[in-house]
Image (cartoon, rainbow, N blue to C red):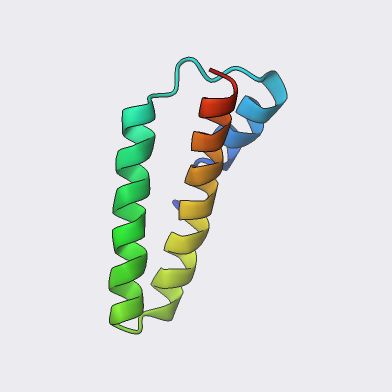
Length: 71
């Protein structure tokens, strides 16, 4: 559930082209944390964590791209 928690926001942002209330700082901090989580999981061979954190990282990166595109 946590992995897909940002998906509704990404879909809404894509449909409405409105992202002014989304914080870039929050998104960058989240991307950094998720990237570190993926790295940790890969270094420790925790495949399920690497997969789910990787998916969440991609969803969050999509949100950042939409934020930058639709300022």
